[in-house]
Every structure is written in structure tokens, then in C-alpha cells.
Length: 160
Image (cartoon, rainbow, N blue to C red; front, side):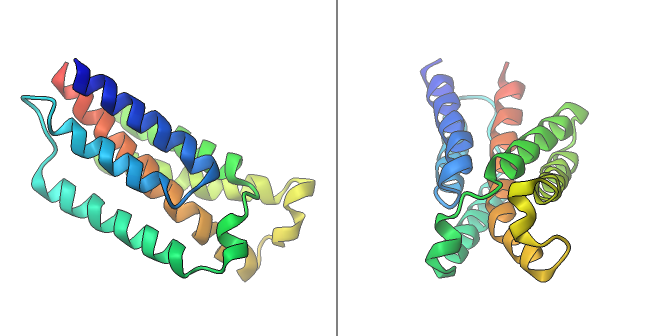
């Protein structure tokens, strides 16, 4: 039971961090996924650990290479991360891992477009390469984080 509580806390922190520190969130989410493996009878496959660990390393590496002003910007993050979380939950409800990842991706894209249509989002100049670059810089960490969270939640639901 303690393992489940620790996992849920790590996943909640990762979801919260995705709204503020997007490049730290996948690390915490991956730690939550790793803790699910300690929960007992059901654990993610080794391939799942390798895939999501690699995705987490790629996201963190890209975050370290991006200009400081882009990394520190939180412009539109509630839209992008909130919609990515909602899309992941819809995909998780459909019961397919692929639907969960696709839902997180679609949510991030639609959240970015929704933000770009607001008065505060006009600075992103939708639909230009500036918008696409910003969406990739902020959406990729959100999609990876939400997908890792969804994978861990799926494992937790299987253990019950």
C-alpha cells in the first residue's frame, strides 16, 4: 500500500510540475513509473521502462539545449498541459496504450491552438513556424510526462 501512495504522490507532483517546470516533470513521472514496478504482481514490461526512459532522457536533453527564455516561459502551459492530461485520460479510458499516447499528443496540439486563439496567445502568431516551434518545445515534455503518468496509472489499475 505504501508503494501505491508513493507512486500516486510522484505522479501528482509530475503532473503539477508539467505546468511549471516542464523539463523536470518527465523525470519525476519516470520515477513514479519505476516505483510501480515495486508494487508487486503487475509491473511494466522492460521494454516500457527502456522506451519511456529514453523518451525522458531525450526531453531533458532538448530542454538543456533550448534557449533560456524558451525554457523559462510558461506561456500557454495551462492550456497545453491541461489538454494533454485530458487527452491522456480519454485514451486511458479507451483502454489502449496507443490511444493514451495519441490522446496526450492531440490534447497538447489542441491546447496550443486554443491558447494561440486567445488575446494573450496572439504573440505566438498562429499558424507560423514560431507557433510550431513553441508548441514542440512545450508540448513534447507535456506529452511524454502525461504518457508516462498514464502508463503508471494503467499499471496501478491492473494491480487492483
